[in-house]
Image (tube, rainbow, N blue to C red; front, side, top):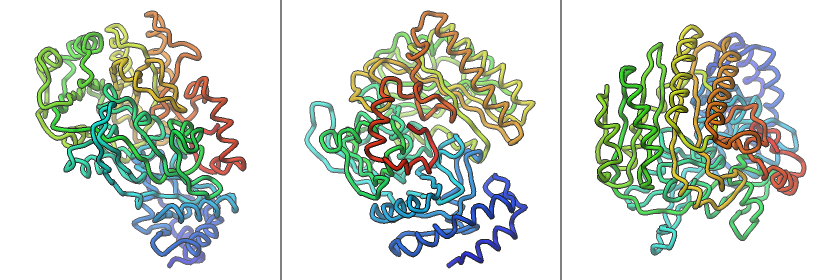
Length: 501
């Protein structure tokens, strides 16, 4: 066991090195050492099944490291609770000591401090159960429910469900955590058919800020249930999600990449798909990339069946491509086709715009933004920038069951993502993302899209750290503040990062 003295000496010894991509200096680490007492109190209070790890321990590193290195912080310790009871104990201790804490699921956040902390990092890796409860086919197409631990990534969930021939509405690319994805809303390959992930949640197991372990459903703690559907970690720590299960067979699709010579053709095909394809089983993500100075397009195609009907994807498949792995395959295999972790360890940031539709002029503006800023980024330690175009159908919103994230009105998200190397360029990248998102939004408004002002509701999992709460929650914000005051009157969850009501 690491003692307090050993930990402080370690901090001093390694005060000049860089850990996890974050500069470590003696002053900051001595400040962190003030939280070691809290770590030791947790270690003494929790069960033997819960791990508490300190600086340089491999599981300390695992618990702190994020997909985007700009989100990393060196915590005083990493705690891996084994069960909700230990989560309760941990929350009570950090509350009593006013110790900052972070909550880590998949670690796919880009916003600094949203799932990291200089205090106690709570890593939910041990909440890794996937339990299928079969039931007869229901009117909504479901065939039972699945209990899913909040510490998993979606790849693991799909792998566990594949032998049962069922699936859940979850992430579209590899490496995305269940926790943040679901608590933010959850756009999926299956959303045209079944709605967002939050529309398929039937229950949350949650540890409240006062340490109470409870369940929220449509009929039990219904206000909390509403708040958790898009309200992130404002109300406590979710340890288990129960989602509807749906039949899942083989699917068709995969990744195609295109060079700059075919950008205009991909643009036109994307506009045609967005305007004309009405099959809810069909979906795409067209990503305009700029990688190490070179423009291109990555296209993910998906059809929920072994072979798509004629006329849906031919506009894309007829374009000469650089690479392609499109085939009939398992859902898990298709999710693995996207190299979402190819920028792992780089600094990164998201931004977003919500639009009504993807017209050809709007797509031309998106392409222009990617090539313009990609060129500039190449001179500022830029590695990769992307603009993800995600057409969905209005049928998705017909499945809406409400929640903190307003999604009754039809809007589709555009995700802007920049990855770079040098911390000294952080300000430029964040500012440029804001400017680029504004230009795209203004283009859509100039075309007559009614998305200005209060109607510009942004998807929280893509939004910047400085996003105004009204832009994320719109008319629901007042209700969410009331729910927050009821379940967290002492504002304990403010000790963790993220959007705060």
